[in-house]
Length: 457
Image (cartoon, rainbow, N blue to C red; front, side):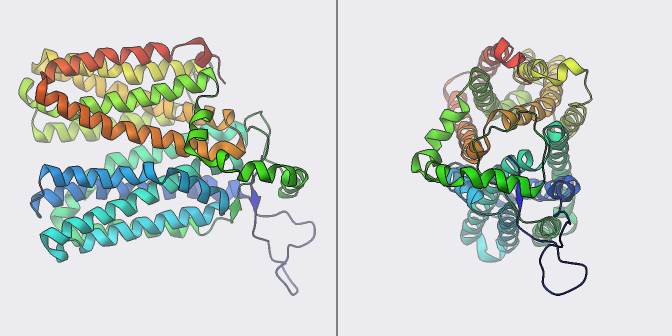
């Protein structure tokens, strides 16, 4: 199923704005091949800057308590769960340029609100930060669903891994660079100008996206990923017109647009079930460990605040490397075998982290660092592999709601993991909790090595 480009190409001479006879329409793949990764980098850089700065400013300048910091986190993630179905409906109803531009404008609003927060005073400033995080969350869920629908509809099957690799590299690079640059910006420019700069970056992403054609992704009965190539727009239109009348009722039926239906799609085959469980286990276990890790490391190892910041920023480079190398690995690892191997490495790395925290000292810190490196590199590779597999395995007409449900489930696992990790730290030994959770993460590591995943394309 291919995308329909709604804009026409004006004639070189003459009146009217219709498409000249015999002239091809705009090529959405060519327009997106460069602009989408660059816009992705600018957007995620701005997001990471605000995610770093808002809690820091709230605590250091507004005197926010841990309860307020928790509320900021809820405002950042809860809307992405609650509005997942709405995002899927919007992506299906409107062209993708409008959806992506709308999500970027929501980010601009979030950054401008953040820039004005300090002027509102401590109490109102915190409320403004919460509103900014809500706007940021709404933009994030729209972009995520739209990207996962748009990319497999526009690009030929053989090009999907390369495009997902570029998008993953852009996101990881932005996540790694933004905290350092933001820290410098807060020191040199101050809070308002730092947030205003983030808003300017989001506007730059808008300028890139506004140049692409209006791309509407039609729903159709075929599952993408049968090896078909992108065809001319006229062929796509003709293929959908013949089935549009008979499928419109099914497509628009409420049962096909619920998160429950989307969850069933993510559990439709053994490979999809395993990868969905793997993602949930990864996010949940990672967040349980993150809630306790810094406390344990400061107590058990010679870690300093500066050292921890350097480690966190440095290991992100391995995620960029993993994304870039995902399609340059040996041929056997560019299949389901690679998904299994690197998916196993990503979750198993936390066993190494837990054991390093338990061991303590310099040797333990080295093991923790090795675990972080293994996690980031494997995550970079497996992100490309999983996105490619899902694009091929889920039908076009189901992709929006399936992506929204998948994202909602994983984002639910994040605060649940943090909450359980925080409670475990109050009533149990943090060190032993880390070791136990790290060992339990070997279960999804073994499961993702199953034959049904290894044999996927």
